[in-house]
Image (cartoon, rainbow, N blue to C red; front, side, top):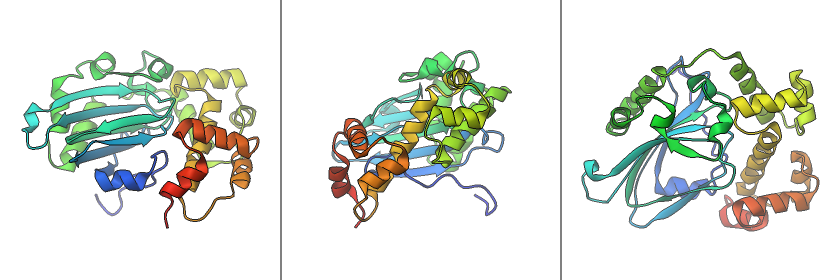
Length: 283
């Protein structure tokens, strides 16, 4: 990558216990081709060789992913591994993936709102909570792109294969997608946007129009997006050094009170925030 080229996002927001995951797998992010950057967050690549199974956990972003993956046995030829590709819609709950023996994943994380130009025939809500074969969404998404993406040992060759696949399938011009991406970016960056009414005022749209835009181009409603990004911040704070002020954090993130934050956190992660913080906080 040249010195002037943009760099992919480096944060680990959404990953549950990121230090543990990164100690077990080789995880990288890469920037896509310039023509694709308005629509994509990044490419993410992961390889592993594990003597024992490991379960990774993720609180998903409001993003669609296209995922090429291969799972095999330690010591066995790569051609004997099981490989497939799929479109993974916005995940509504905790996503858990069991990693065993040896494997490789090459993923495309779209910007929230950025997938529809590549599959304009369907609203993005069609894929929410679902994982569907790549060929059901992209014509020709069969064995050829699977081999092109997963076979190279070199990251740059895998990235080039991902670029080639996506450029062959769009993107189609879509002003509504651009608007959806801008509004999600506003939610992500501006903590004062805590309600749909506030976002509607900022966008100049009615609440109903905002709901339609998000259903068609993001896959989930604006309230869900607001709560998910605030939850990501709560998760990140729990992983930081020190003891968070949970009551203050709840107020800062727009929860009605500390109990609301604790209930949300426990329902999503499976343990209260204090227990999670003790288990994973950086010393």
